Length: 129
Length: 82
Image (cartoon, each protein chain N blue to C red):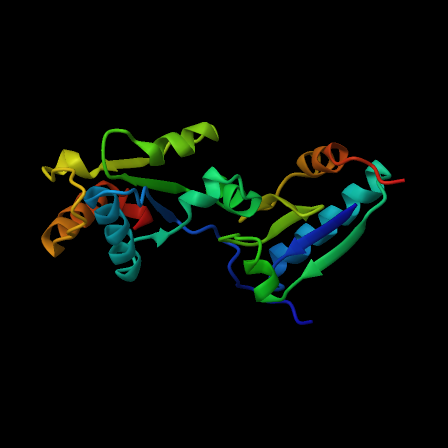
C-alpha cells in the first residue's frame, strides 16, 4: 500500500447539529443544516448518534474545532445533548429567537430556513467557514 | 483485544498504527492490530475524520493522533481476554 500525504486526517472544521425536532422550528433547523452543508458552510452530523452514545460519532464530535447546534426552540435539546457529553457548542442558534413562532404545522417557508442559515453563518468563526 | 486503526493510508494513519503497536508492546497487552483502509468499514463506525482508533469495537479517538499515554490508558480500560 502506498503512503499518501493527504486524506481525511483533518477533522471537519464545522459540524452542524440541528435538533430536527417534532415541530416546524425543529424541521427548519434541519432544513437549515442541509442548506448550509450544501453551501459548504459546514457539515451536517448526527445528533441522534450523540444521544445514542455511538462511539465513532462521539469521538469525531470531540475532535471537531467548531460545533454548531441549531435548536428549534428554547427547550434546547441539541445543546443539552452535547452538554451531557461535557461539550459546549461553540455556536448555538435557537430558531424561535429569530422571530419564528413554534407550531405543529410543519410548514417550512424558504425565507425562514434562509433566516436561520444567515444567523448560523454570521456566528461561525470566520477562519472556520 | 482487537485494535483497529481506521484510515485510508496517509502518514498520520501509519503513525497511529505504529503508536498502537508500541502501546501494545509497552503495556504487554495481548491484542490483534488491524489497519482498516476500506471506506465502507470506516464509515460503518460513523467517524467523520481519520485517523481513528477502535478498541474492541469502540471508537476511542477520531480525527487526531492520540498520545501514547492515552493509548496505554485505553488498552488498560478494556477487560483482558485470557
